[in-house]
Length: 111
Length: 115
Image 1 (cartoon, rainbow over the protein chains, first blue to last red):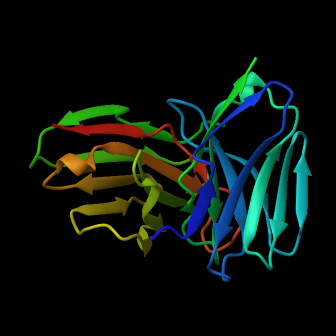
Image 2: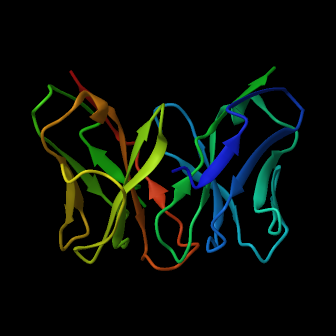
């Protein structure tokens, strides 16, 4: 049973555009929501994370928007670059236990 | 600081065999988690070890097992391999469990192919 639903499955964005990836969850016990970036042949790497008491967190070109009442959160990549082409996973955790991952979004940023 | 290392990086086995994968966490990290990554199911949690004790376990059959040593290094074992066990097995380490926000650092994974 997938505890975190992620969309879209794939995304193509032009260089300089905004990439938006959405995730939804049901378990209100989740208290930490990280995003991971994975390049081919590599393990996932933490990109940015948010807690449910904050509605938005920005780090450079990456922003997480969090809607607690809707149980949804999203990743926005501003000024997308070809180097951002990777697979992105949202995840949710409660009480420091296992990461529950979404199924991933394959992002391609075209020149 | 060296990252999480996993050995071997690639492995080919046949059905019915067993396999052992190894993970060395980042120095000072005492918690090790294992995940299975497949195109169909994505990233799924296998188990987590802390201080040589299994702290948490995912929904996988008993053929999947693991252990952690006193130096925090961990191994996972899969017995009686099935074709569906073909996957990328990822190890992640963190300073300690039980704290949301304790970042997990992933290794590059071991690519297991079962023929």
